[in-house]
Image 1 (cartoon, rainbow, N blue to C red):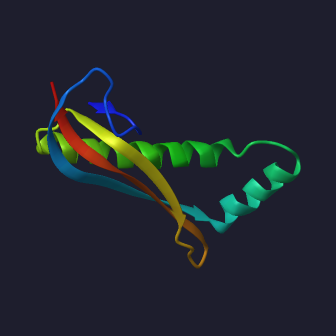
Image 2 (image 1 turned 90 degrees about the horizontal axis):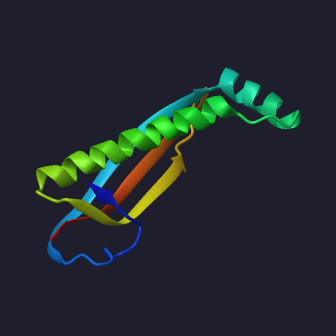
Image 3 (image 1 turned 120 degrees about the vertical axis):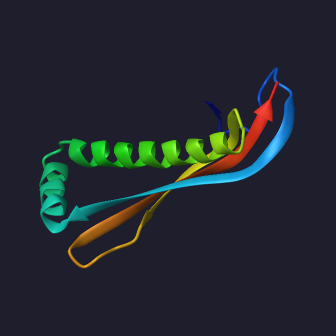
Length: 107
């Protein structure tokens, strides 16, 4: 499956637009992780645990979107966008990762 943020595929002919496909994933962060993250930021370190969790959530969202595109008979997704939203929460944060684009079939 080809994924691209552009609206075309260079040197490829799009023969059919299959429609919008999306994928979502949620990750939660509790107050203890937030506290540790803040300490790391103050001393100049990177919060690699958060980076890993966000990467996992992004991969899940992309995989879900790809599955939907494949079920439509698509072999590429163009106009790919990935969004991140903080949904808040009582003991920490919940982050929603959304991937979306247009499923197409090309020759």
